[in-house]
Length: 379
Image 1 (tube, one colour):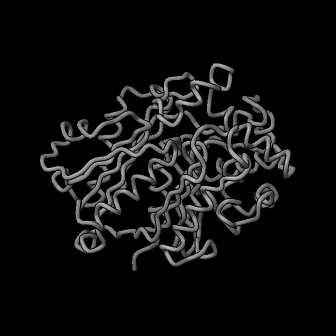
Image 2 (cartoon, rainbow, N blue to C red; image 1 turned 135 degrees about the vertical axis):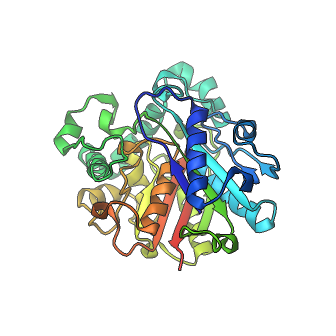
């Protein structure tokens, strides 16, 4: 019912909590509500926040429930699913979900200052001491295997990056707005860890967003048009140890399982979706997600992207806001916010998906756990 976000920056004087509070108040205002209406808060594990932060600073006096989902990058959608269950069971009536972090100024992954997730314990005990130290390396191994098995190329990864940047250049809110990129720029960017170049990696940015979820009955009494959660699911198909221990490194099987569950709930299929919003730490994951979601078969994602199918004018528009690669990295909350804006049809005309009625948001977390959200435009 409500969405709110902060500016995306590379450098801020605000604390992570201040960013979360700013986004939360904006989301409540968007919904036409106040902190007094909130009776459940689902804080972000990736930002290291606790419910007490919001009780104290928003003046919450009658909170019925709080929990923190630990699914890495998929935590945000896991929280959305929890919110749905809270409302459906009557435990809560208005759920606030803040997310995002100071990925440049504070909890910066490349400097080792990110918040430790429990699922990473095995990695830090056995693989980090051997030099397998960060997300870029972890995902690079899966991407390299995908290249080995299917012939995926760096040029195809580059098409993902260029698409995201082109969309961000239509989005004034994006950190990379006004900074165009060509395929040659991508190929000339420095190598981070084979096969990922600099422009294959998502942004380290400061920023936050928040969602307000309520029942469809209550939403009818509010001014803004609501967006319906038609389907929501998660999957933990493989044990979350490390990418090197997955039975099939180049395939995201949990995403396929989560998508099937979400589509059953929504009584729809991938052909009913007008746009895909894929939370992508790296370009390769967009290709892997296209395959996992059933847009194409395994190994066909690279050519599909290279043919221009994920452009705004293509068969399957992907990340019309620029995504984590070019809008900003906010733990996936900006991807849900973009989906809501597309369905409300309030984005810039140049990047508005024509006749947008259904949007799928896909998040990966904790080494290929999957979560899928299907949103539809209210009647």
